[in-house]
Structures are given as structure tokens and as C-alpha cells.
Length: 222
Image (cartoon, rainbow, N blue to C red; front, side):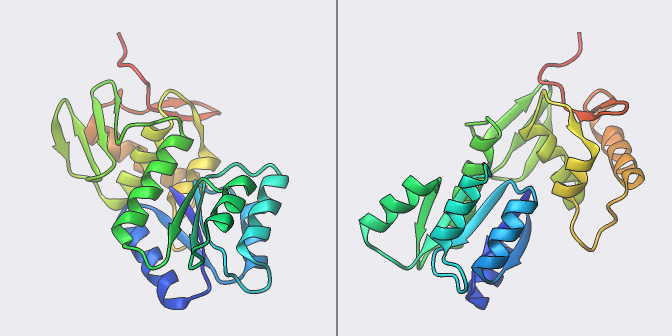
């Protein structure tokens, strides 16, 4: 999953990015409101972590622009401001959750997981699809109760497909949401990754829809 982190304090941005990466997410950091607005309006993200006190354009203005442009990704607002009136204003502007500073990274990651799941239509922390079970808290995939050893990239792929189970996910969407800038974003690399996962999970775990994309079926084939 791909997360935009808009935070101007270098230490906080680095800590948030590291915590999200450790939880299996791709974090991309911007340091001012203009950059946040542009990236959030032109790129697709599964979540935005947005500080209200950004330079050049404050976080509330960024949020209002995103929502006015029809951007629907969930937004977790970070703020050092404590007034309840500001929290209400942010929620009314389209924020999905608030986290006041200082905060624990464990809480931020838990809130991020919940927002991403709910945005994909998955309320529970454990997602099931046929014989597959994904525990998003433990970052663990099981088949019929047996845990599977996955590489970080394999986990990102199967987690994204599990969050969107029952939907054919286009190749371009997968390339954008699971690969980092340092990794190859070629369709043949994705095809090889899917092939490795099928060897581990079984041939029916991930279906190919030629010309469209990949699918984790919600129910096992009969």
C-alpha cells in the first residue's frame, strides 16, 4: 500500500516513514503544503498522513483542495493544535481521523491500518478470502491456518490484492501501489512476482485476467 506523508519536521517525517515501511507500506515524504497538494491531486495513494502546520500551504487548505478535486483517499491528520474547534473544522473539511502530537508510532500505524482497510471495504483486522487469511496486525498470511513465509514485496502484493479481494486489480495500479522507486516497475517483474507467490500459495490463489489484471477470488473455486 502507498502512503503519502506530508510532514515538515524532518525527524517526525523520518520516524513516520520508517514505522510505515516496517508495517509493509510504501511511504513517500513531502515537506511542504504545495508539494503535498500536488502529489495528492496527481498521484493515487491508499492513505495520506497530513500535518496541519505545513509551510507554503497549511494542511487544512491542502485537505480542502483535495476534497474539492474529488480525491477520496483517507486522510489521517497530525496536529500539535489542541483546540476541539480545529479538530471539528478538519473533520468537516474531509479528515478521516486525527492524531495529536506527540504520539506513539504504534498508534499511528494502527490508525493507518484501520483507515486503509475501511477505505477498501474491509472492517476487520483479519481479512479472509477462501483458504487465505491475512492478519494485518501481525503482517502474516496463512493458508488453511498454516503461516507462509513471504518476502516484503510478496507480502505487499498479496496484502493489496487481499484488501481488494473479489476485484480485478489492473497491472498499472499494482505497479504504482506495491513497488518503491528503487524497484523495477515493469509488468514482467510483476508477472514473475505473481508466479513466485503461486508456487507458495497454490495456483488458484491469484487469478490472471488477461488484458485486465490480477484477482484474489473472494471464494475458492468450486
